[in-house]
Image 1 (cartoon, rainbow over the protein chains, first blue to last red):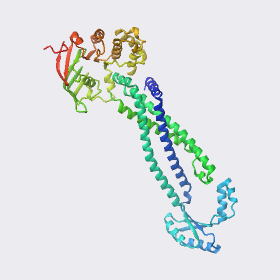
Image 2: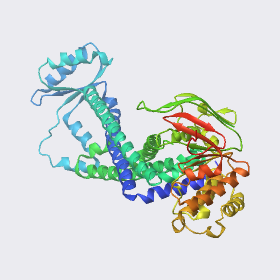
Image 3: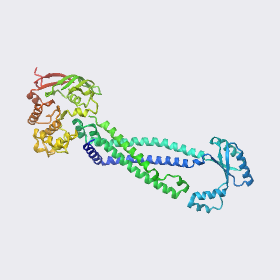
Image 4: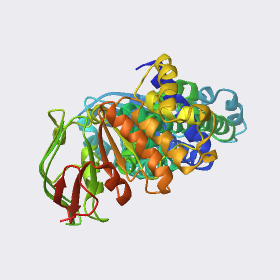
Amino acid sequence: MSSKIIKHTFKQGFEGIYRNKTMSLASIGSVAAVLVILGLILMIILNINAISLSTKEKFDEIYVYLEDDISNSRIREIGEEINAIDGTIAVVFQSKEYALEKMKDEWGEDGKLLEGLSQNPLPNTYVIQLKEVSYANAVIKQIEEKDGIEEVKYYKEVVEKLISMADFIQYFGIVVIIVLLLVSVFIIQNTIKITVASRKTEIELMQYIGASNGFVRGPFLFEGITLGTLGALLAIIIVLNGYDYLVAFANEKFFTMLSVYLIPARMIAVDIFIIFVTIGIGIGMLGSVVSLKKFLSV
Amino acid sequence: MLEFINVTKIYKDKYTAVKNIDLKIDKSSFSFIVGKSGAGKTTLIKLLIKEINPTEGKIFFDGEDITELSSRKIPIHRRKIGVVFQDFRLLNKKTVYENIAFAMEMVGQPEKIIRREVPTVLSMVGLSDKANNFPNELAGGEQQRIAIARAVVNKPELVIADEPTGNLDPETSYEIMKIFSEINRRGTTLLMVTHDRAIVDTMKKRVIELKNGKIIRDTEEGDYYNVF
């Protein structure tokens, strides 16, 4: 490509954007809106995945919470009985005092809050390691039949629920995003159409004179790509700042526990940038191409 | 240099614009195409510049079948043809000079050649002193001269003029025809679609008459109306 063609493409492309500012802004806005929603869905999925991963070590552990009013000997008996069940390889007892200390540690600064408790609300617990995950259901069933058991928790289920929720959000999100992508392609297509219409005489002339296809189409492709990219940049700013704010908000208002699992914005900034700019350029190009196909008939 | 072989064009709405056209145009010739509105004249031009494709038949230009041209090669084909329109189609935001330079820029001519060629064609059409005017400031005849200059500046082999005098008074039309004659005299093939009886009768050139999409007359040194 000669410098002349590049210069022509840039000049005409920017002129197209500037001449119909309102439609250009609408295009940028619609691309940004689509990408912000995409970002939102992406953040939810990424964070659910992260939470699932960080709880993975608890996958093959079964937590048996004991009733508060049973005797120490009954506690020991339960331990032995669990040991005897086929499929368990290790049974560790965690006293309610130990559990409270551990929680204080995990909460860090906020741990002081727990000191105000008049009574320890946490139960005595047996943590069971399984020989294999496949034993889980049988083991849980046998433990639940025993006396003095308050609750049996198996985290795999929680994780599985999280994953299935992530799956649902993913499918739902994909549908929403496809619809929105089509909408923004349509809006860009219309913006380009206006530029094409406003330069109809010139474009027809160019085609009659024998300007190469690249020469005729270049400026419109450039215009579409520029609009898409600007929309993407706007969305990146909104999503990263918004997410940063949300993480900070969660840190402040909710359990510190929760925010430990949240992915910090700077960790995903580069990925978001690449994904958004790629999609932005894609939408812009597609909008231009559709428009050119429809309106450049000569 | 140009040959239509059994060309038929039926538009999507089943309307037959031209039917079984056989036509041969020699290099450096001057031909008029006459006929009522809807006779198929415009379709013939559109076929020539490959704005549309025939439903049937072949069109050879310089020995090449243009109905088979790939879209990438269409611009190359069009550079061999200069088109002059009835409504001039000038860019009103550009000066006379820029309008003509535009045609050269669009096909990638270097600035140096543009600066040399534009004044040459301007002087040929007699507009040397109007180079820096805008088209709106000029009379119809002068605007048509800009359009002619633009059509020939890239030195096409064929110039097609679609009713070039349709919007002009007889005297101005006569001036315009002198320019076309000069262009033809220098070796460029000319094909002119017209309704202008006076011009056709004066020029005594080949006349091809279309009616309902068919050639009903083709005479050397003919008149606008069939005298027989």
